[in-house]
Length: 283
Ligand code: PAF
Image (cartoon, rainbow, N blue to C red; front, side, top):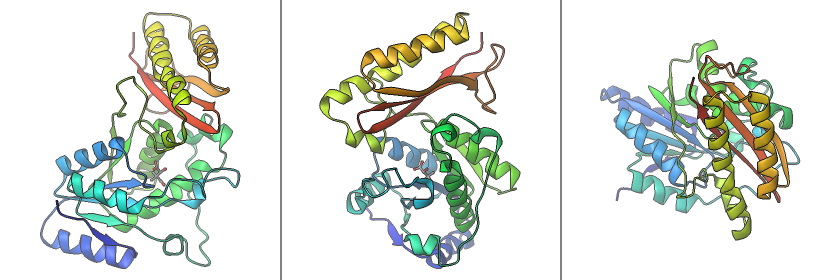
């Protein structure tokens, strides 16, 4: 198993990528915050199917955490992450410090309206500003041919696509299917916070969403279906539900029956906030 090369500075990153380009190689990127799990590895596999070389960034981005959120607690496990990169055959890990990404005097902020509106933003008002800013920087630092993002963070995927479209960043953004455990729980670094009892409850979330998506496909009333799903999430044992909404899958505008859609949910279980989404096939 070959270990990936690890670089911490933008200039070292660029010189490796420049050399690959000189050799005529194509490049894919997978941006991450580390604590890598099977879901991330699936993104790396897609990257390496699409391109000759893969860069994975591992950076717990402080600007996407609100002061009340879990920045300090967020799992950090670089040695184990590098093992996963080696297993996946990734060639380069970019592990910048916060000072490398946000040096003294850094003033930029990237705001993408449209798909950022509502959902996560109602509960984490500055989250997508932080995501859009760091993703814009990462994509411009590497300028890969494509970058892979998981559909699990569906609103994030839509924001990143719009970011590249509106700012003419010449990178193809590829959405990758969510990887789930055998009972349907979406892989997430935050699952590490769940107790065994909470895990059992968390596993109900996707089942409830799938039933709701099926009901919508069969013509059930949208609001009643979403209200029922919200009740079921609470009955399953979640402490509260931030949102359960149906949106158009491309723009995230409110869903209409003649368009492909997604049901998106965020719910809290103890100290952990889980998100998930499922496709609503057009009827
Ligand atoms: O999804 C994530 O892990 C992060 O939001 C991302 C895209 C790496 C930006 O920090």
